[in-house]
Amino acid sequence: MGNVFCVVCGCVDQASVGVVERWGRFEKIAEPGFHCFNPLAGQFLAGMLSTRISSLDVRIETKTKDNVFVQMLCSIQYRVIKQNADDAFYELQNPKEQIQAYVFDVVRAHVPKMTLDELFEQKGDVAQAVLEELEKVMGAYGYSIEHILMVDIIPDASVRKAMNEINAAQRLQLANVFKGEGEKILQVKKAEADAEAKYLGGVGMARQRQAITDGLGENILNFSHKVEGASAKDVMDLIMITQYFDTIKDLGNSSKNTTVFIPHGPGHVRDISNQIRNGLMEAASANTDIE
Image (cartoon, rainbow, N blue to C red; front, side, top):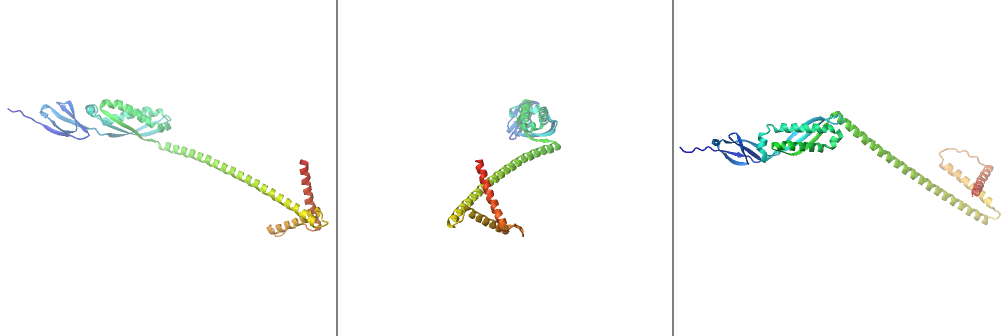
C-alpha cells in the first residue's frame, strides 16, 4: 500500500503573521507569503494577526483636584510584536478592552492630583504616565505601544463659560490699563506742549514789548531833536494819545458789540496819559527797589 499525502496550502498576507499549530499546540509563526500545511500530521493555520499599527480612542470622565469634572479623549496607537505574536494570539482574548481598562486606571490615578489649569499645562505628563504603564503591562502580552496622545480635554460647559469670562475680564482689565497709560501719556504731552506754547508766547510778547519800547525811545529822541522846545514828556504824551486812539479804532473794528461806551474828552485823554505814565514810573520804581 503506497503512502498517502494530504497537503493544504495557504497564504499569509503582507503586514500579517500566521499562527501555526500541530495537534492543537503552538508550533511556529508563519511569515507573510505562501505556506503548505499537512493536516495528516496535525498541522494547520490557527489564525492570523495584523502587524499594522492600530488606533484605539478612549474617552475617560474624571475629576480634577479642584473638583472640576472633565472628559479626556485619549488616542492609543499600538501594534503586535512580530516575535511575540503567539503571546498576543493566546494570552488576550480582547486586547482593546484590556488597554482601555489600564488607560482608565492610570488617568484616574493621576488627574485627581492636578488642578484644571495644571491638567491643561501638563497633559503630556499624563500621556507619558499612561504610555509607561501600558508598555510595562502590554509588552508581556506581545503588544507594543507606539504613541499615546491626549487629543482633547473637555470640561463641563458651565466651567468653560466661567473660564472664558475670567479670560475676557483679565483681557479687558489689561486693555483698560493700556488705555489709561495712553491717556496719561497724551495728557502729559498735551500739558508739555501747552507749557512750551505759553513759554514761547511769553518770549514773543516780551520781545514785542521790547521792540515797542525801543521804537518809542527812538521816536522820542528823534522828535525831541527835530522839534524845538518839545520835551521828552510832550513827546510821550503825544505817543500815548496816538496809542489810545489806535486802541479805540481796533476795538471798534474787532469787537462784536454794536455800541461801546468810552469816556472821551480832553480831560479824560489827559487822565489816561497820566495813568499810563504813572504806571510806568511805578513799575520802574518797583524794579529799582527790588534790585
